[in-house]
Image 1 (cartoon, helix red, strand yellow):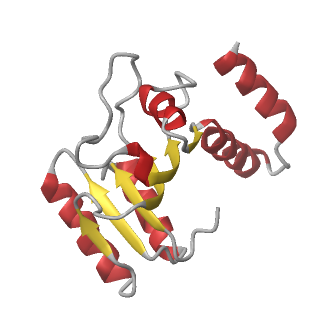
Image 2: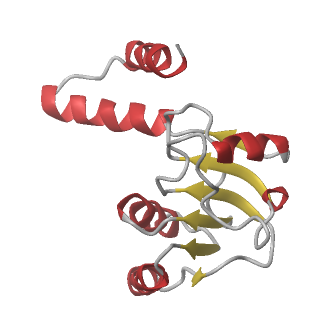
Image 3: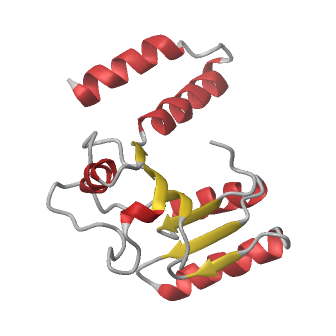
Length: 160
């Protein structure tokens, strides 16, 4: 997916959401829509984005338009009974082309299940976990990480 020029809705403005939002702003997304349980935290993140990336458009609240990506950076989805990290009445999943849930266990969260049913491309956080671990191993060992071995081990552990 090409990030430059895309429109992204991020649920969560904590540590993971903040880093994702800043990276997306640095990559040149055209619009970032920020949702968070605590609105002040989302507002602080929008302000930080405007300060660091003056050309980036970051707004707090639901988009009134379709988005290219909906990204879940909250803990909602760790259990099968969790609600979605946003209000579907405010933003139906059919208005997102793709959904990325940073959660990797369970492999299919309620959000990903609903996203697939709505026709969205959907992915969990397994790849993010893999590449974070690989980078840490490379820094620690000074050697290239065995990505295929690491991916296989993660897939067995996550998917069975």
